[in-house]
Image 1 (cartoon, rainbow, N blue to C red):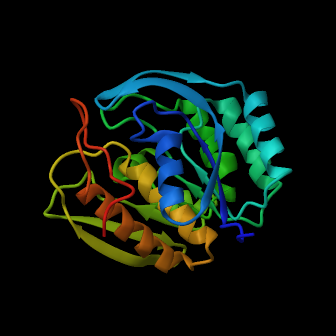
Image 2 (image 1 turned 60 degrees about the vertical axis):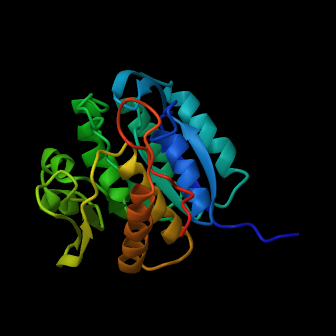
Length: 252
């Protein structure tokens, strides 16, 4: 019998396009050699152009999904995406607090690529207050980092690392910086690709969770996740009228 690969538990909303959300997380984690298990936090109505509506699942159902899975699986890492509601943030924080052995990757998705809101002010406040202290690494873009108070505030609130992605900044290169309490731990530059990509942040955060689940140290895990994500974007395809979708199972 084959040995089980590392298990990564994802909390995220569904994206029917498969470009982002829990579907993107599952594809990425599997592509990186781990086994994904998932807790659904919300349903969305969306396409590759944007999100029409978000429908949060009841927090008790979110907690029950996690309880059932965690009674059966030994989880090596957690990945958090769109959480759906303030009550879901509270429920998920309780789950994470009971399992401090596994690293937590928080992708603080506050809006879609088009700007559709995916987290309210109460959810953001709870994220800062009760999720950041449980977070091994948060992966905001520059807009999200600013809305969350900046890197310094995120670290002061409890995040052990913050990886800020530069996809929304101008320049020929995308510059990503990993911070901890000492300052910038590493800086990576990637040639900016043409087009706009649906689920690039989900891909990066999930690839990072998979690397951490395999026991790779944070700085190298960050580098490995970025390399994979850039290649997935470079091999991306455009199946609809909106953004490109990363090709998670690209040909090297």
